[in-house]
Image (cartoon, rainbow, N blue to C red):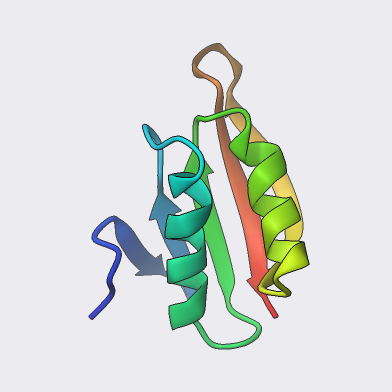
Length: 88
């Protein structure tokens, strides 16, 4: 059972929706989710806090948790993005 209530798995990809969260919780929730995944797993993080676009990748790299595969801008008007991470 996941510690994160808003996580789901579809087609082998984990999805984490942290829209509405702000730093540092954006990274805390991402880290908790990554820690539950196996090496090589893909995690799509849906977010809307602009600072998290910088903080999550930097923190993942610093802690050797994951690398960024891609950043998608979903809705520019609502400042929504998807970070695609690969667990290290």
